[in-house]
Image 1 (cartoon, one colour):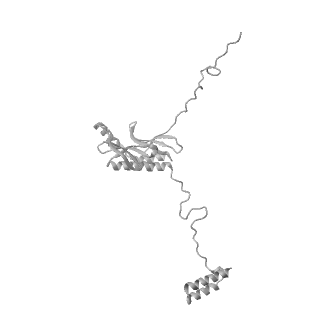
Image 2 (tube, one colour; image 1 turned 30 degrees about the vertical axis):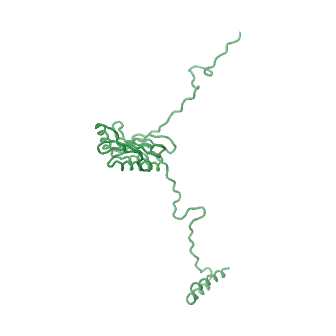
Image 3 (cartoon, helix red, strand yellow; image 1 turned 135 degrees about the horizontal axis):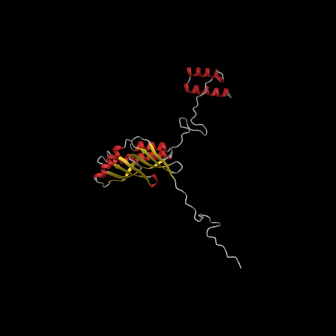
Length: 237
């Protein structure tokens, strides 16, 4: 069978190159033992049941927290572009994360509100009516914050791995300027996190829990015996 293969190679060589040097090369090839003939280099593109070469293996898909952080930043950037030289003071997820309510403060302290969806402003920006005292308060708030919304989001997600921020707002808490956030954890629980807007320190992180309501009819009066509401039949005489 090896000789048949060699013969076919010889024939192909002769047809491709004609007579002369090609013929001599074919004769030399036929004279070599089968083990000395170099094998063609076969490149395997995909192993059965495997992945193509160069493809990442073992890479986990993006977590909901990462996707939520990306959407938050897209919404914030759209709002900041709509009101140049402004600062984010609130960003809140609505419509199950499809839309974001965003509030920004301009250089003069005026507050602007808008809705952002898919990275685009779909409503607003509208200017909030405020007096000079409120504008001054806004200016002081954004000036005191050394961390912007994006840096605060990084701190919060580091404190709650895999969490998704549903609301983030700049506020005062016990005399400190803080970023407060509502976070939906990976297991579906809600958690509140506060980050010092000056130092970046997490000052508060607490899970929001609700006690289950008591079942009706389970309350028993102290010192009573038997089922509540039970009556005793009079003894026959």
